[in-house]
Every structure is written in structure tokens, then in C-alpha cells.
Image: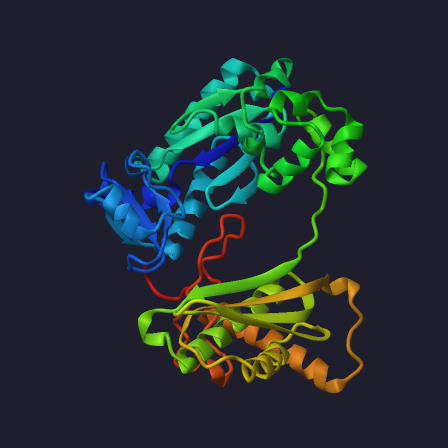
Amino acid sequence: MLRYLFVDMNAYFASVEQEYRPELRGKPVAIVAVATDRTCCLAASYEAKRFGIKTGVNVGEARRMCPGLRVVEARPKLYVVVHEQIIAAVDSVVPVEKVCSIDEMACRLPHEVRTPEAITAAALQVKQAIADQVGSSLKCSIGVAPNVLLAKMASDMQKPDGLTIVPEADLPARLHSLQLTDFPGIAKRTELRLQQHGIFTTEQFCAATVETLSRVWGSKLIGETWWRRIRGEDLAEVPTKRRTVGHSHVLPPELRTDAGAHGVLVRLIHKAAARLRKMAYCARSLSVGIDYLGGGGWSETAHFPFSRDTLTFLEMFEQLWARRPLERPLKVSTTLFDLRPLDNTAGSLFEEDRKRSALADAMDRINGQLGTAGIHFGGMMGSEKTAPTRIAFTNIPSVLDEWNTDW
């Protein structure tokens, strides 16, 4: 049974820029975080991809690969606004059940829209709704299959602007032509584990027993889930445990100083702490790292009782900062880890800790109206606008999370 329609926007960031800047349409475009040839491409238009430019390519190298490349600084707020418009457009045709990332969403098909003819008509209506309600430069590939995993994979089979339907009767043979790493959740490390168990092709993967897949993942539940999903079963998702919250930032030239690195790290800790609280987690470890211009780097970790307040994290950071080498910084990073859900953590018995948590909550409420830099501790002074929010594909910020200015 065909249950899910999966929408995957094509070259999303670049397409949004081409929609809002007509002079970029039909041109090779690369999206970057900062306007410097030393950074890497965050995304590329299909015109740029024809030259071999893809995510992660150095901008200087990309310019050599494509002399006419248009390099555009990212506008995260705009991408989130358009993302919300796309959800509304798709939802006007078929109900959006799950937003999977900034450029992907899964729709559960109503029972009356599960024949190949009805599905094809609905898919074409989705494409037209996006063009009419959001913009004609925004194209999507659509996959339809019995479950979300297979519908997502189907959306990758024909790009750009494709439509692929994978009926249950065609499974798992329809998958045999794919690479193991085409499966969401199977990256190089997992592929190596599969190979260690004698699985080198997707055909071998599909033919593997539940027992073999359970040994690969070290879990009978996960092994059986994979076995059943590649055969088209629609299973409930297995809850995942959040492991870390962190941020990193390449320093602009004017902040490649000791004071600049300090200010940006304080800013990153504010952001990470706010995200931690929004997810209703607490942490008991903080790491800080610096990459240096001359090569090499430094990192250290502090451990403390479970906490969720920014002030505690900043105090731990200052202890680590005092032990840093005095070299010229290029990139800084910080990570909160050893996480635990807040509802599984006993509250502190100390009044001081409760006051700090209340202060953090008050700051979050104020910053919900003013933006994340609206109120902050003094160590961030002068760095409020550094390390702007980036869009991780699976972690979409709200327009109100940080931005309170026009794009």
C-alpha cells in the first residue's frame, strides 16, 4: 500500500536566492556563510553542480572550477520564512505529517489518494501549489512509497523536479540498484560494519536475515526494524536520545584575537544553553576548542553537576579559558554533552541553583521577544551579532528564535 508522499526541495538555499533575486536565475550559484574564498560552499544551484561544485567545496576552488560562479552570502531568516510558506503550500494539497528538515517533509496520503493515478495527480498539484504560492524557481522531487524511509529514498531517485512511485509489490528488488550509503542512516562507518558481516551490496543487504542485521547494529530491535522497513512496513519511529548540543564558528579576520575568540565563545555558550533549555535537557559536561591560524588546536572539558543555566556554563568556560595557549585563533567551538532529559533529573536542593535556573528562564522569555542577543551576560559585549544562527538541516530555528531584523 502506498501511504506516504515525500517532498524534497531541490537545491533549496540556492533556489530561494534565485527566486528572490531574478538576476541569479539560470546562473551557477554557491551559498556561503561568510563572503570569503577561505570558507566552503553550504549549497549550490543545479547550474553550479554541473561544474562539480557541491556542499563542502572550498569557495576559492569553486571559483576556479566555474569562473562565472555567483557567490551569495546565506540569509537564514529568509530560508526559514520560505520553508514555512512551502509547508503551507504542500499542506493545502495533502496533509503534512512530519517536517523532516529545512527542505524535506513527509505527507501521509488520505485513503482516497492511494491509487497511482490519484497519487500522480496529487504530486503534480503539490508542485503547482509551491510554484503558485511560493515561487516558480522552487522545484521539488517527490517520492511515494509504503513508508517514510522508502518515500524519502524514492525522492532521491529522480532529481531535479522528479516523481518516483515505489509500490510495495516492487520491494525490496526496486532497491537493488542503489548503493548502501543511499539508505538514510547508513554512512561510511555503518557501511564498514555491514561489510564486516559479508554485506557489500544492497541486494545482499535486502537478503540478509533479521539475525544478521541485528548483529550488524548490535540490537535486535534495530535489526528487525531495518528488515521490516525495506519490505515496506510502516513502523513507529524508535525514539532517539539526544547526545550533544554545540556550536562552532570560523572567526572573521577582525575577531582573530584573544579577546575576539573569548567574546564569540561566550556568544556560542549563550546559544547552546538556550537550545538545551528549549529541548528540556540539562548537561553535566562542557568542552571548549580553538583551532589556530598556524595549525594545531586546543580543547579541554569541564564536568559539573547536572545544570541548565547559562551562568554555570560560563563559569566553567572561564576556568577552561585560563588554561588556553596564547596563539592566534581561527575557529572556536563549544559543546554541552552528557545530556539528560529534564524530567529525568532531580532538581537541585540549593537555593542558588534554583535562582540561576529561574534567571535563565527569564532571559529566555525576554529573548523570545527581543532575539537571543536581547539580554545576555557582559562577557558577550561586542560579540552580540557574531556567530549568527545557521540552519542545520534537521534543526530548523523559528523566525522568532533569533532574528529581529529584516533580511
